[in-house]
Image (cartoon, rainbow over all chains, first blue to last red; front, side, top):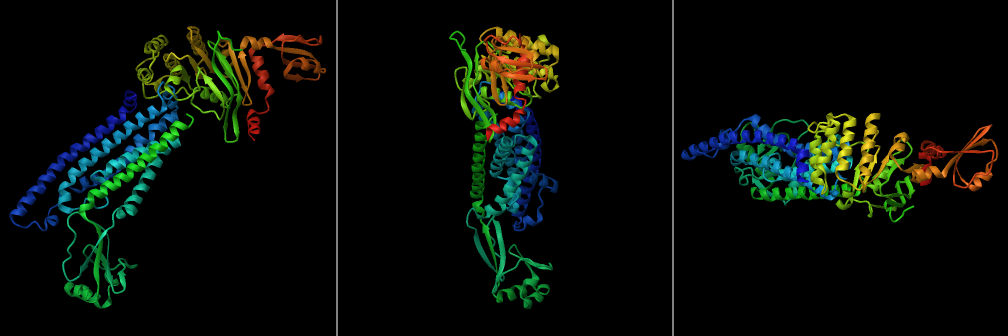
Length: 332
Length: 302
């Protein structure tokens, strides 16, 4: 049966392997360069006891590479659309399922082996791409602490494996239900984007209760350590939360990562904005204003990776169960 | 119908399939003894013959009745599938794979598989083994598909419109090859077709579907012997209808033509009896239900 799967899908496998190999070469070559650049900058700034603002002076990589790495967020989707989608849909569409299902192999075994190898391939490719990206980003992570931020979180660590498995299962299920390749591709794409947005924007901030930290305007803010993820932030005053946006724009100030339009500040303080930042701070502090952020600390990074991966694994299992029911119960 | 020396390969009782309220197949009771090549004939394009074949191959589930095929109910178990050779109407093959790839797939998916028979057959027909199946002609694909179906060494062949894609010469070769394979022993075949002339040469058994019911099921010779065409003047035929089953009557102002079933002698001297051919027989039963078959089917479902 495995021989059959290989014979059917080897062209996809070759193509995906070639793309992965090319990506790996690019990542390893540029990644080593960046690691070396970061190490030498670190060595020289340690010698001069001046590493505090390394993040501001050191520029790693280049925009094209960063864009390419950001785009690896699409890898699970591509696997699901072009490998998972046609897996059953093409068999059902062209009728070859009638050939496959009337050989001396039960449909259950046929489905298990076909879907099993596809899922393994998804995990392997998703994992390999993620491993390369994670390694490539390690100097950047150490320097800019961005790996908990949405966007970076989604392409590093173990979540891409969960996404890839889910996308593959989604493609397979869509194919089994719709029995047409093209609609299966479209549904896979649409539903995957929808679900990823829902999870990232509405579920992820609440996996664990966010911590809050309050800052006085009188002192430099003591921001959380390392790669924390700021979920929200704002300024509170005597009248409660100060709105973080205005209808008509205008100048704004930034404090502790919180953006605040000047026009929303007490008018007595507004004028100081352009004169003396220090007096603006004491003006605000004197009137009972604080900056407050809620955030997920860096120590929760792997817990969040694990929770999000688990969510997608559970959904994968549900999709596979649905596929099995459809394929085994329904008339061929 | 079934003797102990002639065990039934297919036996169904009241087999039915409905989709919602629409009855696609109603109360099909058929018996096909071993070693027969059975012609499955049904109304054109209604998909009823396809459905019956798929029910027998375990590829569709009946909503009523029961079937025994090769001694067990049709299903998805390897032991059952190993016994049947099913060839669907679309002649489904992997277009991007070669004939040799298909031989390999068959070898990996079947415990009993005769790769050499396929290679021999394709070589004798001049069909290239290494070429992608998508580049072969429709006739070549049909021949390859039949060869692959036969390579399983099945005890029962279920072929849906196998000659539809073939030109007349290839059609004759195909049917000759099929007859040869069945004559080789231990094999039974059911093939559907709309081309009665082709079936007449090859088949010795008939299943006739009309209006989602089985109208006839039996050996062709027996069925032909049981039917007669009577031609006579336009007159009252109640006496004949009392002794015989009237299948179809065509009455004009001057002449009456009756297709009757039954072996009693016809006593009315005004009528002249003659033997019936397969085509006449089939058309007689089909004409009986010339009220559009699908309308009848819907009516039954309600």
